[in-house]
Length: 97
Image (cartoon, rainbow, N blue to C red; front, side, top):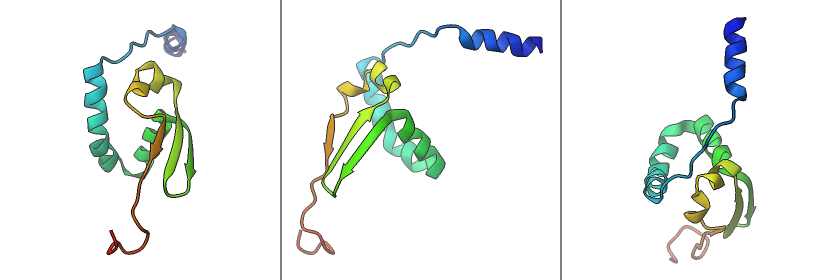
C-alpha cells in the first residue's frame, strides 16, 4: 500500500513539458508515415488521438482539425497546417488523370 501511495504522490507532482526544438519536430513528422504503417489499427487510433482533438472531414477535398493541447505545447502547430486540403483529379478509375 505504501508503494501505491508513493506512486500516487509522484503522479500528482506537476510535470515540466518542454517545447520540441524545430529539428526535433521535423524528425518526428518525418517518422510519422513509418510509425503509422507499423502501428496497426489500435496504434493508429492512439496516434491520431494524441495529435488531434477534433477532426471534421468535408467531402473528399477538405479536412479541418484541432490539435491536442499536448501537440500544441510541443510546437506541432507550426509544422501542421490549420486546414488540410486534398486535391484529387477526376473521380473514377484514374484513367482521366
